[in-house]
Length: 287
Image (tube, rainbow, N blue to C red; front, side, top):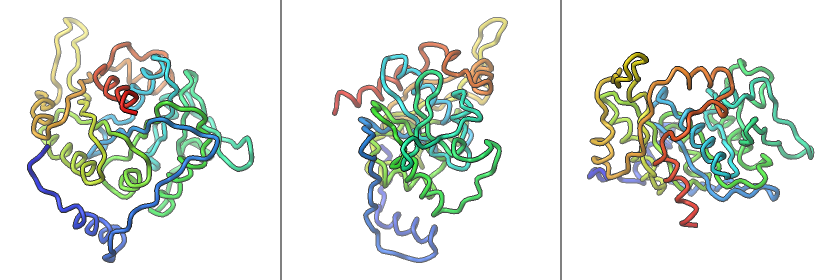
């Protein structure tokens, strides 16, 4: 890990003051609780220190590969104001309904992944979500507690980018067993990854490792790897923080097209980021 010493209580007070405009003594958060009809074995966060690095893509790859391995999988789309999971998984236009009048039914993708997302509860998927902090927190609470998840082996939480209010609530209120950090090859990656690592450390959540997205593109003519954003910093960054490198993902137009078309599960190539998949599956052996 980094040799930087973090005053956790001071950081909590600073975050609270920035968010709420006044100093408060740290208060232990009340954890969200599943309803009686839902049982989730493992909750994993997919996080990043900034937006635009491909968190949803990595969450989708992990979910699809876990399903292919015979696991029961759900995705809680925690990016409340910028959800993309439903479209990726062929659920554009779908709406979450209630079968019992009390809870919300998770919507199943064609491949069987259970999904809950803002875009499944708004009238149109292009409607903006103009909610302030308390409403965002309330939505997140409902998505976890009031959704009928049924039996789920792995619930992946596609976190909002950065280290703001919603991310803080996820860390404090959901039983996160570990996080996968998503980065990109740019020079500032160490700072960005550091924010995510330090936030996880402050909240006592283990970091499973880092996936580097957009690492390269393969020339369609000769197959040579072209580093569009410069050389990878994955090894140096993970060594600096004492965490694992979980693999690299290329820029792949075919995967991007499948996300847009909604047939991501069907067209996803086999064998992507196997180390990340293994790190998530290893949680089962610790239980």
